[in-house]
Length: 403
Image 1 (cartoon, one colour):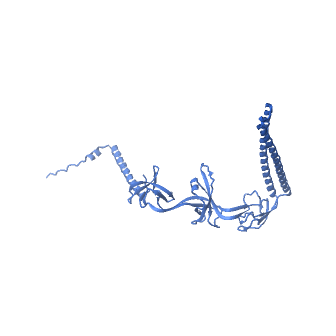
Image 2 (tube, rainbow, N blue to C red; image 1 turned 135 degrees about the horizontal axis):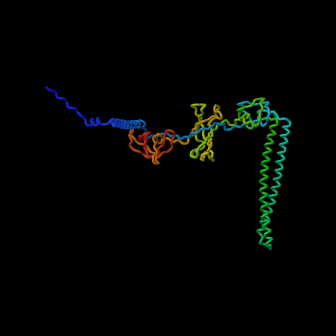
Image 3 (cartoon, helix red, strand yellow; image 1 turned 45 degrees about the vertical axis):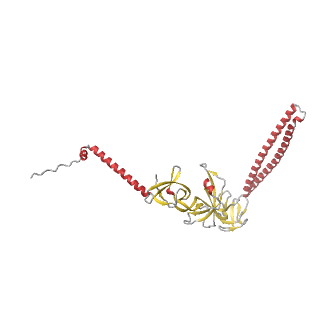
């Protein structure tokens, strides 16, 4: 029996593919792969978007609004003391940590100036003193001249006012007016001379002060405490040579060990900040420790910075004396401006800002968008933002959703 061959099954699309040239085949394959990649990216993007979105509820929270700043710890009362004499320290009567009373002896210095230097300094002082006396005498003369010129001017002005009450000729009238003008010039010149003399007195007084200080540097001296307090930063020893021109103080007296911090704030914060606000201080040297403080004062006069803005200085005082905290330590400051309890709030990341409005994306547990709501916000901190209007407690919001 003769076998019948099965007819070939042909697919029109496959036959058309066979007839395509090699270049078109490559192009078609590339186009197909590109479409597959695009579809895959869209699917992946949708998945990633769903993965980054989290859900949260509008809930009641306590929100603390704080200002974060940094500053340097300083003692509230500190006075530098240095020898006014250039010489050698012969005796020191105190040490670091000692408590001293006002006028208590601190140390003694013998001047290293030669007799000639002492005589020269004294002579310069006397010369400056005489120059001041001469300037003061000149001022007395100038004041007398001003008074005389003033009286002459008043007399001339009165004569001009009464010029028509007498039978003066035109020439006489002109003479009286000229005399008034001359009296005015004389009075103004005398006033100008007074200003010059006053400036000479100020300069002479400054020269006298310098001469006296220079003379003091040539004399033996016993330094005493200008006020009561605790000795710190004693930088001299017996036998050391000291010089008043040295910027380093010989010692410091801490009259008030309470520490303060000055911080710079902007206009908006300055309007909200008042004295007695609570604050917390932290320093790198004492990790995990918080030192309570309060705002003791806020400057009312601002300063213009390089950018043209206005800044103010707020002063914070620590609640207690902490001996372990040293003046000059860098500190971070948290100032509590406002606290709101039991207010509706959402995570900061849940808020969108669109067309001039803050918005919340309302969704469900499957992270599906259900509605967009405009809301009014209140205070915020680093975590939560108060919702004053536009949302209800318990509503589900999508966090991280982007339009």
